[in-house]
Length: 267
Image (cartoon, rainbow, N blue to C red; front, side):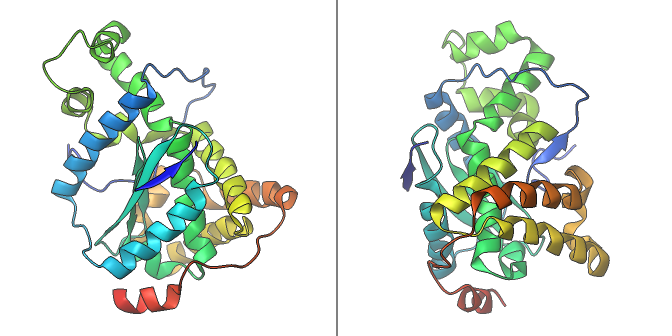
């Protein structure tokens, strides 16, 4: 536990499935910080019943060491961040409200440096710190059931199920917490890059990982098919991050562990 200030119901859980809006209004979030944690915990329980979690302490501890280093610089509410590795060779990662972070073994194996892996994790931590998941849930549930109904649930006047259970029963995990707007994706990139710089990682590594995804798209498109079907173009994101990173400066090169040793365990 890491403290920081700061069709198919699940199917393939996307890094951050993107919904593009022409002129998005200011985000509204009816959830309290405590309800972020409650809803995220219930969603995590559902995810872990339906997705294979890798049971390798060395790999998991390494990922959590990176998350701990980043989360210390996250800002925002004081969530308890914890990371788990999904036993899937697809290149992907995602996070749930309250600090539940998941990264696929395929992404760890694909990263060329610890900083690239940290770039993905920083992006996901930024979604949590900026509370994008419950902003999305407010929008999605409000559109389907009505804002008044959601307000009753969150206000404790509808006690039939927990907050997360009611939302997940209606929307599913993806629609409830992970269909982010293009603006939210760009904000997570920007906040994540700044987080990396404060933590001592070179934020340009986040851009270089998107370059890697472009290469993977050409050589092994199946590995990144869901990513490219639901995200802003990697080249566009890479260019934005490079521009922002130029203002942040590079990192100190310090690593929390040996990525190559971890990758060798994954095969």
